[in-house]
Image (cartoon, rainbow over all chains, first blue to last red; front, side, top):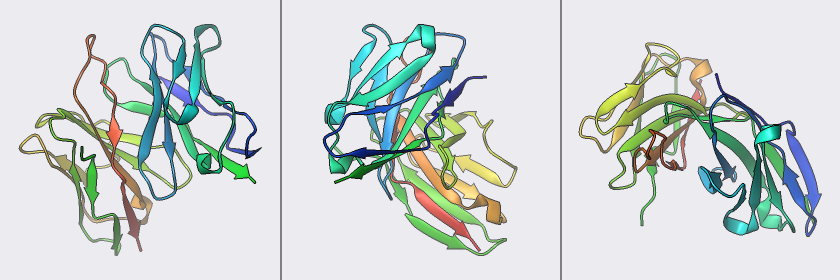
Length: 113
Length: 118
């Protein structure tokens, strides 16, 4: 069965500094990968997705992610963090059956002024 | 356009009560999903509809959980005889359908219903 691991439960970053969130997946076939962000009391908002093609994917709010098959990773990055980026971030993979998403445990990002 | 909406946003139930949670998907979206998110964890899949057909209910934790989508649009998740362990945020998502190869198109999430069972 597929699984997603986000090794960092919490990350604290200073405003203006760069951010990288790690995501590793375990999945036999070609993965379809997603990053979602969840602000307190809000639903999940899609940041970006990887289906195929260019392994560097650009998303909304200045985020990007790189798919590395050899490392089974799909890490999320942002060059300069804003206070509004404080939220919880979830990496997810869709199954071979093509329906349900399997999520990682999430990484909570705190932004220091 | 309008996104996925869910109601109620908050529900408090006494142990043993039945609850019904509603999801209005994005208009025209064929696929609808329910997920359960416990405090401090990632969402976990409950069930999946394609139009009115429930194609996967493998994630429903017990026979107390029941979901329906009778006309292929609005869906209701019902929990009978609620227990404290049912306390969670219930998220609904919808997508246009399946891409080539059977992979689900991007899922768009509603704000969730936070259920607290006392």
